[in-house]
Length: 126
Image 1: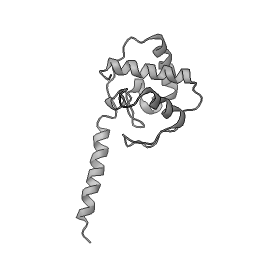
Image 2: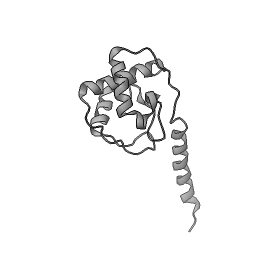
Image 3: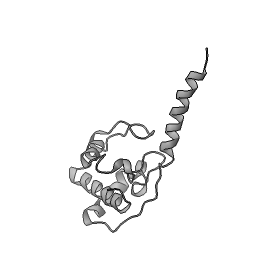
Image 4: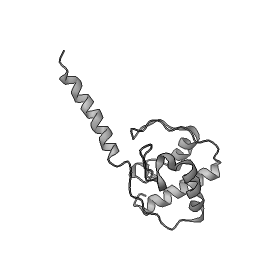
């Protein structure tokens, strides 16, 4: 059996993982934050940073949220609420599915989103 036809799709898959992995940790500039975003900083640190990195910069466990993929026109605030409450299937990055985050009120989730959105704007993502 000729193995060359199987090699090409495998190379494409490997290349796609490499492409996503090239920007899995980004430099983040922190702005002066609103009071609501300041509340979101601590909540993000306790609930999100283990996977999404300090200030949403990404890590080996999860993607950066300070990235054009998560701009409001592509991932609206409701998408963040849904991902936090229900988890989400992996669809942009090779990290695997996100589990739901338990124990956060809607107000706390909104504070986290406000924090992420303000940091996105400070980093040119609108």
